[in-house]
Image 1: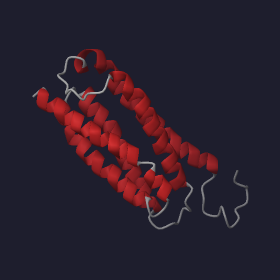
Image 2 (image 1 turned 90 degrees about the horizontal axis):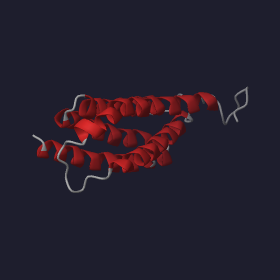
Image 3 (image 1 turned 45 degrees about the horizontal axis):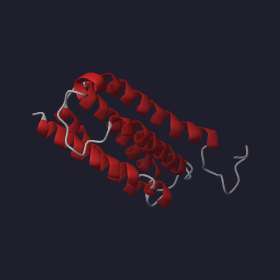
Length: 170
């Protein structure tokens, strides 16, 4: 636990409780917002779409996203523990929060708007933003960057799935 008075090892670091809150709350908000847009559409609209043969069963999405959101929160927590004045820290956090906003936007585009095409329009920049986040995190904390590779892999698969659903239902 951080001491009340900074020392050489904690100078320039936000308190651990603040870093935890800043890491966890946006991820929880993203998860809840995405679920609010997604879940009502699964039994009706989504169930009626033609899907490719490699479409996973619906039950897999919850556990996968839970794990990915946990990795994202731990990753950004590590960046938040980098001293405030460190070169690239501010940019890394900005890019991270941009990708989180795009993550939420995809749920509203694909499910909320019932539009695989709108989902594609959002998921392509999301992929780029995740890659940019990994690149921005790497010089600050290699583990934080590496924790995001499963997220990039899943969203790459989701992009293929989104494109296939759009193609089959155009």
